[in-house]
Amino acid sequence: MTARHTSRRRVLKGVFAVAGAALVRVGTAQPAAEPRVIEMTARRFSYEPNEITLKAGERVVVAIRSLDFVHGMNIPDLGMRLDLVPGRVTRLELQPQAPGTIDFVCDNFCGDRHEEMHGRFVVSA
Amino acid sequence: MQRRDFLALTALGGGAVFASGLAGCASRADGINQTDFYFVQLSDTHWGYQGPANPDAAITLRKAVATVNALATPPEFIVFTGDLTHTTDDPAERRRRLAEFKSIVADLKVKNVRFMPGEHDASLDRGAAYKEFFGETSYTFDHKGVHFIAIDNVSDPGAKIGDEQLAWLRADLAKLDRQAPIVVLTHRPLFDLAPKWDWATRDGAQAVELLMPFANVTVFYGHIHQEHHQMTGHIAHHSAKSLIFQLPAPGSQPNRTPLPWDASAPYKGLGFREIEAEAAGSAFKVVEFPVVRA
Image (cartoon, each protein chain N blue to C red):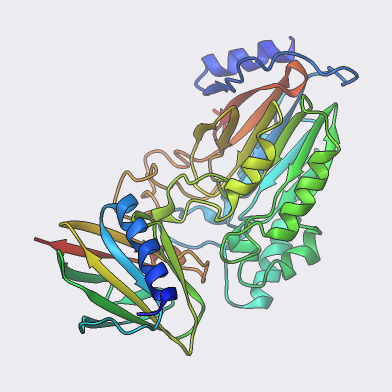
C-alpha cells in the first residue's frame, strides 16, 4: 500500500470513528482481500437496486454506473457524498460495523421525480 | 386601527404568530430609518404541477393572489422564495410555465414584487429560462433601513451557492455595519435541516459563517412546504408554507412524499405569510394566512 493510500485509510478510519457505522472508501484501489462487489445503476429517478442487504463486518464494493445524469449519492450517516458521472464506474467500499440502516439520497436535482430517488443499506448482524 | 393591532387580532382569529427571538438585538444602529413596515412572502407555487396532492392546482395561485389583494393594509412589497413553477424537462414548456406564472402574479395590486428561483425553476438549465423572465437570481436591495440579500442556492443542481456568489456575499457584507439589520431571502435552508431528504444547501454553512458576525440577521426561505423555525446561533431561519401541497415534517416519515389532499379541508396547510419588521429590522413578527380567508 502506498503512503497515499495509507494516509487515505487513516482518514477513512476517522470517518468511521465519527459515523460509528461503516468504514468507507471511494476510488479504484484494489484491497488486499477481494470484497463482494455489488453492481448498482443510477438513472432518473431511482437506484437499482435501491435496498442492499449487508452483514456487519462484511467488506463490500458498490460499483455504481449512472446511465443518464450526474446523479448524486449523499450518505449523511457516513458524512460523505459522491457524484455519479455517466461513463464512469464509481466504486464505494463499505465495511459496516454494526446492524442498522444507512440511507442514501440523490442530492443533484435531476427532474420531476428527483424527490423519489433514494435508497438504503440494511446491515444485519 | 394601527397595523400592530391588526396583526394581533389576526393571530387571535387563528393565524400563527412567531416573533423572532433575537435576544439582545433591540439596540438600534445609528442613522438607520426606524420606520416599521411589513411585506408578504409567498413560496413554492409550483405552477404547472398536476397531481393528486392538489386537484385545484390550476386555481390555487389565483386564489392566493386574490387573498393578498384583499389584505386590509397593502404590504410594502412581496417576495416569492422560489419554485415558482413545477419542473419540466422541456425547455419550451418551462418557459410557458414561467410566462403563465408571471401573467398571474401581474394581477397583484402591489407592484413591488421580488422573485427568486427554486430548484424546480432553475436547476435543470442553471437558471437560464428563469433569468429571461425575472432577471438575476441573486441580488440585494434596501428597504427602510433593512438590507435584503437574495441568495441563489438552486441554479447549481448540486444545491451549492458556489464560490463566486459567496465572494459576492462577502463583499456585500463588508460594506455593512455589524449592527445593520439584514434579511436573507433564499429557497433552500442554509443549514442541514434534513440532509436525508435533500433539505440542505451543500455550502450553506459558509454563508451562515459569513453572516454570523452580524448581530441582526433573519433568514426567510421556502422549499420544505411548511412552517419551520430554527436558530443557528443568533440567526433565525423561518421557512414558509407552500401554495401547492404540504410536505411532511422533517424526518417524520421514511420518505418526503406530499401529504394527501384533504377534500374536507381544501388548501389545508397551504398559505402565505405577512412579515412585519419591528425595532428597525432587528425583530420580525410572522403571521400566517390561508389561501382563502373566511
